[in-house]
Length: 216
Image (cartoon, rainbow, N blue to C red; front, side, top):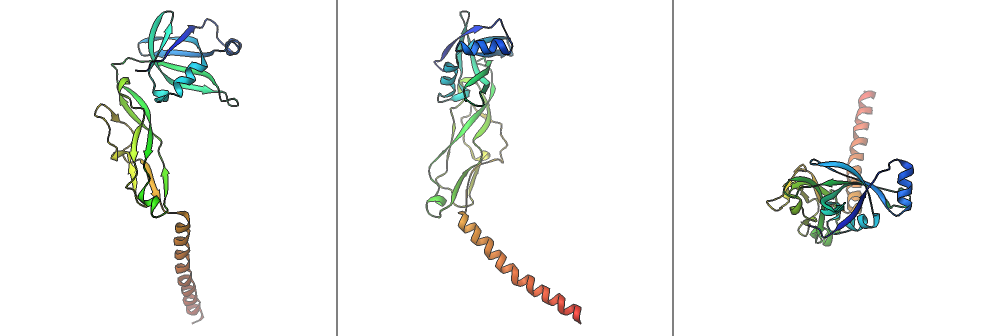
């Protein structure tokens, strides 16, 4: 459970003009909602929310909001950024129950350097950077680590290869590729050239045979 406890105030005014005044005052509009929580519009500090997003568990962080003296556990379900400044302009906060299983998106963290990269000049491709899991809010991991040390060229690691805590259920398709090591670009181009050089004489020979057949 996170140590973050953010102060929020219930909003009484809504709309573009009200939101503009709110942002000028150093706050942004947000909504707190949940299965057992009446949706309420609030004003919150974007600086505090940014600190939550930049914490180790990121948007999966479970933290508290203090609304009129009552603490509610929430997580950031969605947020919007200013397209030019990149600053927070709105957030949706989902009220959670620590004893209720929920779905989360957890980052995939790659560790190690593949053998195929070290000795053969291969290229490590990080294909899938997040996977979907379900678990209790208190059990959600900050990330899921994938050791790629033993991978050679053309080797890959799929979702089905992951080892996770028994408290966590993986929801992503088991066939999805997380990481793979591909052949170096130069080698791939050389192979294409070899195929083309092999194919060209055959096409020329075939063309001659057809031409001779026509003449007969």
